[in-house]
Image 1 (cartoon, rainbow, N blue to C red):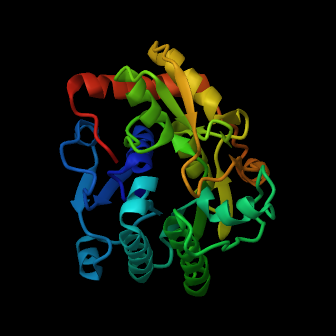
Image 2 (spheres, rainbow, N blue to C red):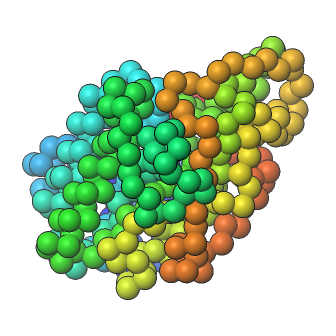
Length: 323
């Protein structure tokens, strides 16, 4: 099988590439390398790598056709990026999707990476239940709200993919990722951010939004779900959650787990959650289970240990980088 990963040098993209390569598939990665080029993990992957700016239509001329699977993972993510340059988030995330849809050909099966952030407005006003199924209405609570730029870019991406795919006969799957974590995800996310602060010995240790809860999904489980969904005929034309609903945890308890894994015992202080952060997030995975038989396999503690160990090694080597 020939697989193309747009955004293949990113967090989920590289883990997906490793999984596909391990099963003997041919993989090509396309990226603009905005995360940086000094990347030992990327260098260790035996895949063709192409440089392209997916917001520029002409750059698609460098990308051949004939793929069995195309994974569209390229996007600007992370709360800090959204707060610092929301216009860039909307521009990059929208143009990457629209250009990819102009380029792709019928018969090339497409996966589009969306997010649980599309539910933030509905969860905040109490119209969306948690755990959340895929068929609830998506709500725009406030277009001026912090972080809305990212969520709306993914809403637009979903609409563009599902309607264009239907009109052109392109088999597609949209996966809404819920709090995926793991090695190499960058520093501006809760688990690595807490881990790196703990490794630096921060004391007192501030916890933001301690009462909020999340259901974290290790990247290995997320990749397993993606690959199951992309099997021909399994989920064509569907929007499906990808996550782990087994170990929903409060941010306070997650922080204590990370501190225990690091071996750091500071005084803990508490602060409000960042603006725009929802109180609770957990996916309803009944559709994913019924379509694929998926069950999450990585326990939260095991996944946290795996993630913390990677960041500890990177910090010791002096090359931990923000994603």
